[in-house]
Image (cartoon, rainbow, N blue to C red):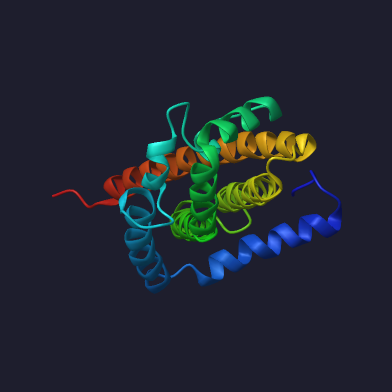
Length: 202
């Protein structure tokens, strides 16, 4: 039984985890895989106004803050100053594109984990809640984006408290993102091993 939160929050997390198991079907997985397979390369590599490649001409002192593991308020403003006016405007457009990516990635990975965990972990097993790791990553990513949008909208005024929260949110996002991919890799490996072991020998 989960005991890390008060009962109300525990029930909310259980319901959220259960909802992903309920909707984790081959069809849902296929649709999300298609959507992610289209949006990810566009966002990361295509020459579109909201794409990550647009920041390259302004990134002599470093790329967007989202890709760092952590940064202080001073480091955040040093990076924003280095972008210049055009670079900051470009960064804001990128953040608009990043309003789609975290949700798409989080839901896709959670559905994928749910499909695999359902096959290797008995119902009621605590490990089944690993399907919430990508949602924690998604939540931290959206918090980070909101803080960064606020910094860019207020610039040149410096909102050091918000910048500090953004740095912490980025670190939390990085940790949960890493844990999500590690969990997916381990669960996929266990599923493959189980399938191989169950294969009848001739």
